[in-house]
Image 1: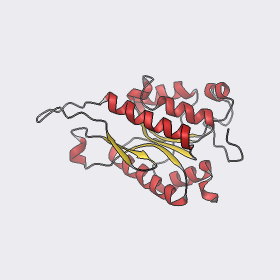
Image 2 (image 1 turned 90 degrees about the vertical axis):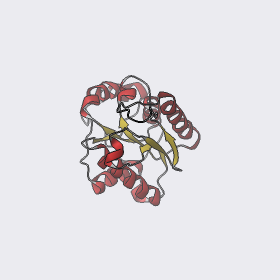
Image 3 (image 1 turned 45 degrees about the vertical axis):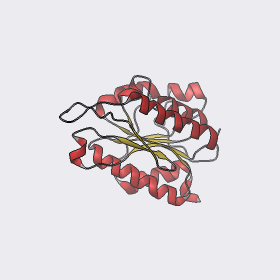
Image 4 (image 1 turned 120 degrees about the horizontal axis):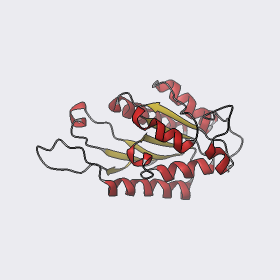
Length: 197
């Protein structure tokens, strides 16, 4: 378990169910998903700056795409720290307007990230969002749990439709950060200790 770092718990008054279950305080901050493309750019910029600081990152961020591509739900994840790419959207052919997640590819990405956390450790876990898969107990949910159990802070995107499931999972209100690069970077450096390297 990590010690000697500043703690920014989700709830400074009451310990959450996960705090009690794991015997550690949680550092989880969320960025509201008001615009997926803007959030993707923000998270990737923050990750790049943290990597420049020497912060050890694990997780997955969505590769930013143009607004036109968003209509087709093209989605590729960039795995941290090395930038390995895994496409998690299925190609349904010309003329299809449906959005189709490739559950197998998402599971592969989550498995790679979890293995990296186990084998290499991390100062911070970053994820593009707590989405439907995580709300239903799949996706990167196990990675989040492992990070909490290990005392590693987590930064994650969060949309209103999945906020209740997220708060049920963590047992505490979401700690929402403003979608501002410097503010988010400051939280990450403080939580991960990267600002003192």
